Length: 156
Image (cartoon, rainbow, N blue to C red):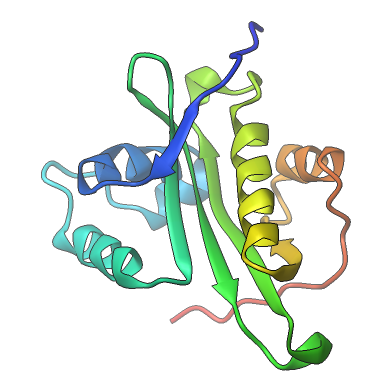
């Protein structure tokens, strides 16, 4: 494994949606949730536009030196009353292209999100990962995250 010294992290653009969906679908859980079609279903672009308009959500991509999208994550800033009115950050949909895993890209993305959350006054950062994603859990623990809550889901 060769370490990539750095990637460029920036807000996702509409042109990045296909690459993002490709990474979201690149495992058994994602394949069951996403629809990889050409062209992509309009719902993805509608969702992108809603995310882009929301000042409390940052959808970012990591690009390699050739400009290829090799990672992504979504950072949500959640204002709230608990913890004395503290805002919290929620990191979601962290993905790295399968051919680039193990090179430090995910770590750079998560470190970017933590720094962004701190800079926006958040008092804590949370993330969720599926219980079957044991490698992801090990990765987040290595970055300093600790198991704390039991997550529950109600799908429609």
